[in-house]
Length: 224
Image (cartoon, rainbow, N blue to C red):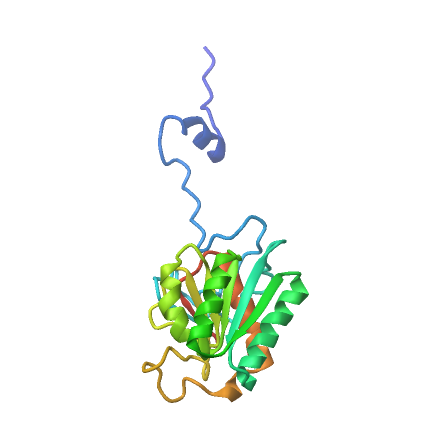
């Protein structure tokens, strides 16, 4: 009587054969850190600066260039709100505007003087339901702190400043000399106009939008 040969199957085939009987044969793929719209380029491995999953209000230090290649989808729209005409704010506005123009992003830039006008312009921006409302510089922080938490359906990005207690819909990008946190909270050194350069403005808007597109919101990006 001939001997029976043992049945051999590749591991993948064996898992597939018993998948209906044994749960967990195939290990699930790890969940992505950030989830963006379909087709959005992934973030570089150094974007989170060694943090697996940032907690709410966390500060991360992304490696320069780790956001390269992440671009907004077609039809993306932003409203840019600034207050004041100082050189630093103008540099931020120019950087955001240039970023939008180079990518075909629809941008509406509005300016305000004083907190009352900032609030009025901000509420009008929210009514328009853009993909993102961007605040440039420290002069918008006090009003953003009071208003953004009341409109959780809207995503906000602040470049060159941050909120003291951001909700999940507010992301900030700061660096040394551009880290104002609000009246009565910030300290000497949080504002240094010389620290706001064209390069910093370009990095800030690119990194900030990349973070928002990947669902990494409610955090602070600290550029080095």
